[in-house]
Image (tube, rainbow, N blue to C red; front, side):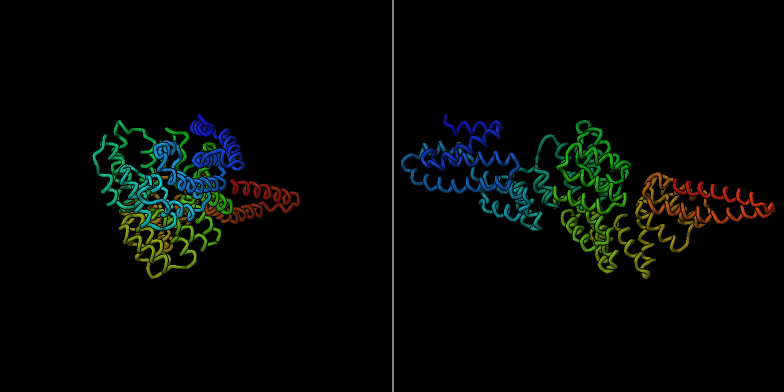
Length: 552
């Protein structure tokens, strides 16, 4: 057993620090004495040395060492052709124990991917002949093509993965093609329940959002004894609810998954609606700070707290960790939009749309940007496209109505669209909010109060309580309006509009109270200076109390 075999055995057992030190010494000795090791042995030493450097996360250095190994392999191939006639059997035995050249190229591409050098990674993998590409090479190549916007090439590579591994679910989802899914996944397998789960998950990821959640069998799968309390199934079901706009059930399923797996790192945008987002962000950071999710959740907390600069930084950090994170792109885009940097926000929302063409929140963000920059024509074009593509459901109807509300000519059309949306889903918050805004413009306060009371019967939402308070003020029901503002602030202490509404009511009441107090002093008619001074001090005390109340 020679020294190179010892290096190989240490690499196989994971002793990379030892491998790095020993292989470095041996390579130096080989450079000073080229006859010390054969070309095959030197190739092995270079690969093992590069593996140790890769393990230490020195990816640029590792890519360089892997490239040196490939150069050495070329020398080895030339010498092996010469020696084939004399010692072919011995050469084949020696070649069996050597690292694969294809695997070395994959490692180089992996280094480039981590270094964000996607074009270089694609060039390396493209250099591998198609017949020699393994499923993991095709999978990496497909993801790189997809990231670069080369959809056709990505689908072709995904097909190659599915040809060898028909149950590669991530490849199925990556295709965004239901027909392709049926072609490769509809094969006999056991147990049938697992295939049923795969089929439903692929349907959710690949089909448009206008399909009702009732069309999917996730709920029935969850009740099966074999899949009850499965974390991945609960997370998938939470995503289904979120895509259908059912935030309440999405949160319930997500919290259930969290209870089953305290180390669950996967979250969705609806996590921002949880009562304690800050605690969730801290918990995720304790699990890992090398994933985008903790940074996104902390960014959501900053965004809801109106700290948009910090939200922008946290979103950028999340994108740095995972450039394909749709949630991070949406967070950064929303922060840029609220900071007035609309054109930059549009770029991020478009990238999110490219990565997740079936997610409506990507389109909503882009439409909001168009409306913020007075691009009503562009917003209307996109809203109509979504409506025609995904059909008439509560979400698409509300999006189209939102754009119509911006144009005085299409107010009646907006009203009709909102009525259709609420007929389908009376509890859809966004539709309720837009309908209430329209009723407020028309000064139909009683209708608005009835609409909001009906919506709040089965849910509690800060915006709805605040809007109900505004309508109650309009009909002079100040006491209940104050109660609604208080409920809104209890749900979101940072809701500035609720606080302003409460303070406005207090200011309107203050002059009346002061007039009544002044009339009382005139009726006493004491005219003594001491009494007047006492009245001033009492008024000052009352003002202090009123100011304190306004701060609550």
